[in-house]
Length: 77
Image 1 (spheres, rainbow, N blue to C red):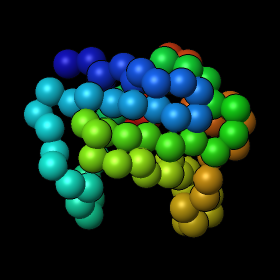
Image 2: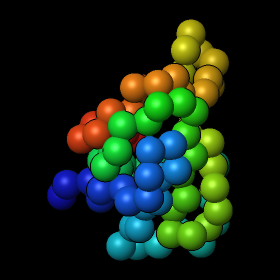
Image 3: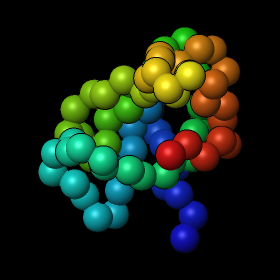
Image 4: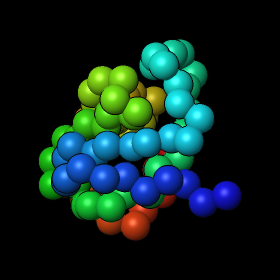
């Protein structure tokens, strides 16, 4: 099954999952295909639960995205 594509805009991604979580919990993982390339730090809102910053791991530290880290068509986990 292919990951769901985001909507929204660059740096403000929206994602609708078919089986909707009701809260963000520890260890919640999902895959999403970016519909826009980010140009700076970015947020995601899954099933209208609320905004969360998208982070990447750098040397074991969760770090804000830099421009181009989540390009259009890329699958993120």
